[in-house]
Length: 345
Ligand code: SAM
Ligand code: DTB
Ligand code: SF4
Image 1 (cartoon, rainbow, N blue to C red):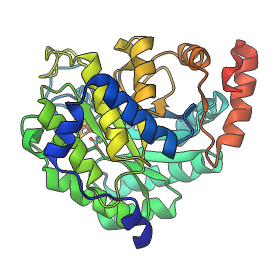
Image 2 (cartoon, rainbow, N blue to C red):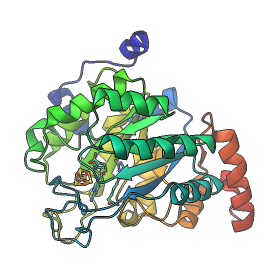
Image 3 (cartoon, helix red, strand yellow):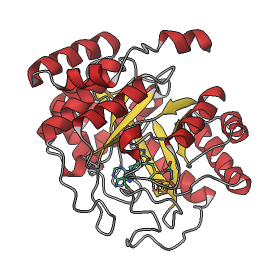
């Protein structure tokens, strides 16, 4: 474990060196990112994860971007119960049959209780038994909880740093940056792969975006999976009217992440519904090689699956070959035959 940890961490990134990458001419930055991407990844492959909200809304935390916080005036202030196992399995089977390789389950909790975790453990084992990779995002975890998740067969735990340490206090006050680092440490120690990224467009500066990426890259080792979300501005949240980030700045963020975390799978996450196909293509060019695949994220829209299949076909992108890819590719081939969209087969 330790040897891998050291080999996958450069440890050399500080905010200024990362900011310098952001400042490169756009085409130079893209060229550098492509070079790194091609050295470390199959350039035309994209990993597909489907997301399901297993417990929605009424969250005690005050994350300014999030429609599920009960501190904000959105329609998700009511407590919702944890989804039933059967409901989760039906959604996971459907996702698998549409070609998703990983099933990610999200809960709007500050942290799970032991009782809540018991139920999630059942979900993890059952989804794993379908032949899919599993990921959950449940808020803060204690070491023992991370170990129980690992024993249930969990592959990835998603817990984002969201933004730079300096900007963090403008966005969340109910838990600290250190709380997040502690959860990531517990997950890593338990032997679960780490999915950790952040959000662009919270009102942060370029230097603060660089600060987030430097934090991620200096985790030892850096995360296997790095979701880069473009803020989905939801009415009723404090960030509903924040100015959108320039699309090239978003692409630059992906390119810089690719250069400083060469082996990570980079996920072009929330915010794709508002992005043109051309911008998404630039993100793939910059090194993004994973997307959420499915009509919904947790509570907001994601591009329709048909639309994503068509985009992948137009760009000649194929489903990433992972451990479960053989199975997923067969499923997509079937889905594509019915939909007459053969590119993923
Ligand atoms: N409650 C858990 C937590 O916060 O760790 C898990 C679910 S939470 C919704 C997972 C992540 O979704 C957040 O850390 C944030 O990065 C992302 N997210 C939430 N709302 C978003 C939005 N409006 N736009 C973009 N990303 C968002
Ligand atoms: C992540 O980084 N993005 C996903 C996943 N991890 C859990 C969540 C995006 C949520 C977007 C807003 C919503 O749909 O509620
Ligand atoms: Fe709760 Fe997670 Fe949303 Fe924060 S991001 S309010 S912790 S669901």
